[in-house]
Length: 202
Image 1 (spheres, rainbow, N blue to C red):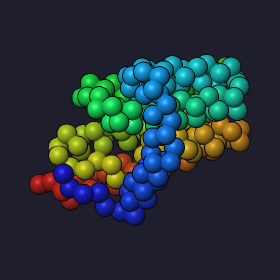
Image 2: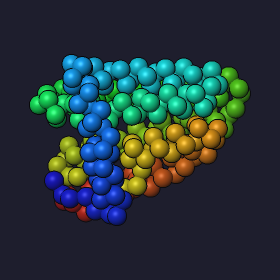
Image 3: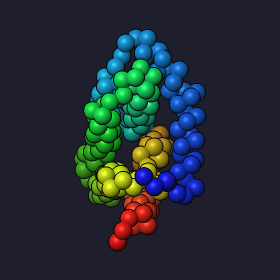
Image 4: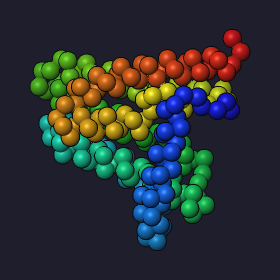
């Protein structure tokens, strides 16, 4: 595959390495000692996201944000546990990707339900738009990598979306967070499209 370009990707890789070394690896060793499987962690993280979605649908924005971030933190452990135990598998990677996207969609659906109940059209439109753009960012990466081109390029990947949404929920400004995610995700899709164009025949 072609190597990623752009100043944001190296920063993301460095941050991921730091988080793995100092945070997820030590906790993952505890999970290994408790004989908790990677797929069980993945599934549990998804259900935490569903719980966050319910809280958000009830208007519990800050608590829902805290639970959402808890689910996102759990997602840091499954891959590390799999690598440390030699249990990394193709199905595990597939399950992780699918449940990550479903969990993210569930959280945004919770917000959509809340805004529909509140008769807030702007909030509902932003929630729907965020779902669509988030899915397209993930799809653009998957499709690029299906063509043997590095897909994890651009500004707004899933970790960045989680951080922005988490800040928005904790500060009670989720609409601003969603507007930012929509705008920057559109840029990210354009970046990935341009990257694939440069690295394929056309």
